[in-house]
Amino acid sequence: MESLYKSEKGKREILNLYDEKLKELNIEYQYETVDTSYGKTNIIITGETDNPPIIIIHGSNGCAPIALETYPNLSKSFRVYAVDVLAQPNKSSETRLSMKNDSYGQWMNEIINSLGIEDVTLAGFSFGGLVILKTLEFDESKIKEVYLSAPAYIVNGNPIKALFKIFIPMKRFMKTNKIKFVEKFLTEVFTNRDEFAIKYLSKVFLNFNMDFTPVPTISGLKAKKIKTPITLIGAKNDILFPGTKMIKRACNIFPSLKNHLLLEDSKHVQSEKDNLVIENLILNK
Image (cartoon, rainbow, N blue to C red; front, side, top):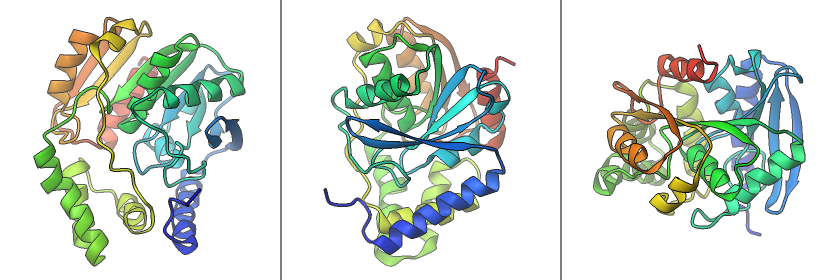
């Protein structure tokens, strides 16, 4: 299989930043590698072993340390399993799964079975939300409840707006290596400036073959079959997955929608303040 990294040097640079972020978190953790039908999956585990389990799933072009940084207090109440999603710039296998079938759902259920955990809470951001919904479609029997933050797979934004505000700046950076285009991209996607994201995504855009496949949306029929309680957090100023539109559709198609929240001042990537709000929802504060 051809590597998704454009060079070994580029791969090292990305994974060095991965290690840098993990070290910066200053937490006690352990690695576990799970063999699945789709390849090896790297998981960072933290929190007491007798705490209830939660799996957190990062977004596109992300990694487990970023997810751990987003919700830093979960390990006080949960046994946290931060998963490196396959075919992303992280330490899991580079097998690219299809968003159109049930492979992501099968993959996550294999992880849950391998870890030997039940009554699992799932929390995911962006593409991580798609993974979670695919998991519920495939087999939700071991899932207690889920939290979806600005998730993919419910609605999509205006493709013309996304093209000009997000994808063209990304492509221009890849062509010119001028950091101003990364910053332009981040201004549209991130609520607040993130210095690590500038460093990390600069390396990813230049050194990793990203997946530009259009993101599908869940059918009403599949959504109605889900019984697991869902808490949905939308971002009002999200170009990719507009929060108001998302919550309106979710209310219509998910009978198990337990709670929903619209972050009024948020773009796609939430601020630290809004992440704390989401974390408190998960912790039931």
